[in-house]
Image (cartoon, rainbow, N blue to C red; front, side, top):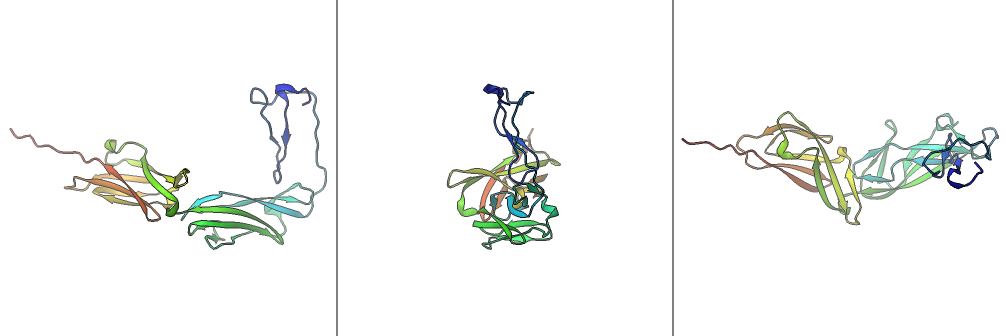
Length: 232
């Protein structure tokens, strides 16, 4: 609109997108109904593919798998449907630290460092740098259960998260699929971020749940109930 002030609204269609989006924050946080405005529209017909924009995570943990997709635009900077391109989009990587599974259309982080995701349709190619975090960047890990271990009961399914602090100060939650679990003095099974708790092994007085990521481990102590006999 043209009235200025807090209700000024600016919308645009980002490159490769089919829908316009709000670019500013009007007063009150929402667009107003106004009667005046200026619009600039593209009326050119679809043209030849000019570029691709890769969409997907730029940071992965070693062992993590991720899917990537692209947005496409033509020589007139209008969006194109990637699925309708004359030549299908082919994904890959440059550095050998990422492995592409064409059948699942997913990339897997094999080792730490940096690599480049590539996407190509014919002679049009796009690239995106990706960082892969391994144990060499980890300062400490922490197991965070959905409820305190003292409250666990046999039959519970406990959701588990493993949080990492990196040596550069960054923090994050490691994907459940790349964590290995070891149980000591605990009956049950831990996988995919869930512990199916079956109680404690007979005769144990110490119980630990250990999370491992790429050789870096952290234990979580689980209190074992003490059974006291009363002698009369």
